[in-house]
Image 1 (spheres, helix red, strand yellow):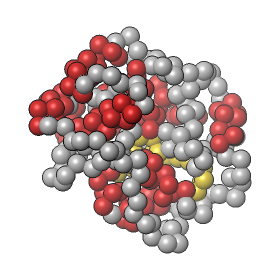
Image 2: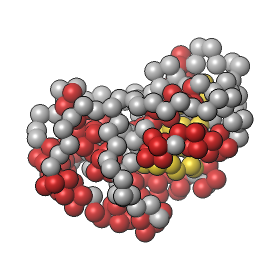
Image 3: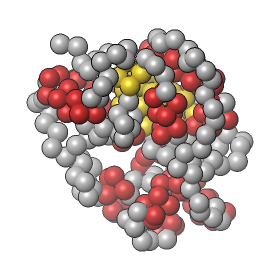
Length: 258
C-alpha cells in the first residue's frame, strides 16, 4: 500500500515553513493541509505499532479533495525536533522526501520566545528563559503531550540543527533530504521554489512566487547582552553544524523577523 503523504516540510519552527507551505500550496500538482500542520506523527495518542493504513486514516481529514494532485505534503515543523518522530516517519514511508529550512538559531530562538509570549505561554524574561531551558525540559525528553514544555520551551534545543540532521540522515538517504536557508527563501523565493520543485520532481510553477512575509513578529530586538548569551549557549551546536554540514550562522546579514 502506497503511503498517502509523499513529502514533509519538517522544520525548523520559525524558519519560514509557513511561507514555503503557502508558496507550494499554489502549485497545481501539490496539496497541503488547509491548516498547514497536520501534527500526525507527534500526536499524543500516536501508536508506534500503526501501519500505513492507520497513519493514512489520520491524514485523510486533512486532504478531503486531494485526489487530483500528484503529491501530498505535510508542513509540521516539530517533526525534525525528535529522533522518535523521524523514525515514525521512516516506518510510514521510507521514500518520504524531507524539506528542511534552517534559520540563524539565535534569531530563531528569539522569534519562538516572542511567539510563546504572545500566546501567554511564557512569562520569564528572555535571558532567564534561555538559562532555565535545561531545567524546564528535564524529564520531558519523550513527552509529546499538548502541554509538554518540549513544544513551547525548546528555544535552544530546536537550534541544534546538526543533531537533527544527523537523525534524519540516519533514516533517509541524502537524495531524499533538501536543506534550505530561510534567508534565501526570504530574499529570493523564486530560486528556492525552483529548487524545491526540482527536488520533488514536479514542473516549475506556472508563475514565479510573489514575495510575502508571514507571521512577522512585532517585537523590539534584544540587546547585545541577550544576543551574546544566546550565541554562547548555541556555540557548540553551531560549531557542529559548520563542521558536519558546512552551514554557518550568522551569515553576515541582518536578522530576519519571521
